[in-house]
Image (cartoon, rainbow, N blue to C red):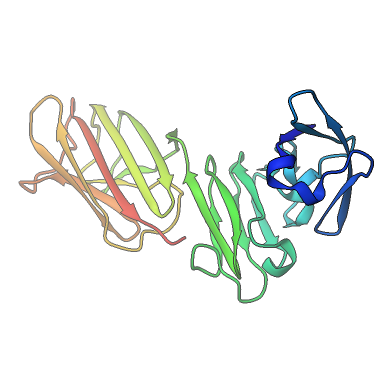
Length: 267
């Protein structure tokens, strides 16, 4: 590394051709040699190693166990959370990690990850945070706690439970269920295609995506693609109860209905 400065103008007391310049910072000493060129500019040349904390981080660490702890050496790393059931992820005390410590986190499996800061420390103002499949973020130590940024998941399909409220069963039915989570907001898209209704009666009951328990009564809006009727989906008993706005059910052969909505979940 070479640093150029006009020390003759700005730092005359520091410049001599015969003595080295020593810079002391955070307990580490860097010894420099001085060269003078014909233009009167001074070059600082050093062979010292740049501290690791000043270099960009590209390392990663994969966690597959049911529990683990984020530590100081995870600074700047990408932490891949890979467990099909669940992971309890503790975090070293903020005072130990230091203000500005950070890492990147991504859940690459189906298990829900619970991030639990030390003692009474918080993450985004809450005591814990749940990280679902596909979610990724940067975790930053800020003062006496932690915050996240770039916190979002990608659109992904999930397996929903689709049942008729009045009993019976579908002869031929298919669906598309997709969702994504951005911090504490879940975005939801559902497409229902009833080819042959069979003995199914009543309204259509659809399970929400496994991205956290809704904190408020969620509401879906939609429309029939073949009749033009406006549809709705109301969260009731943990599931969406879907029908048309006029109160009629959509369980008829040939029904094709799309829904979209969003709702809030706990951190």
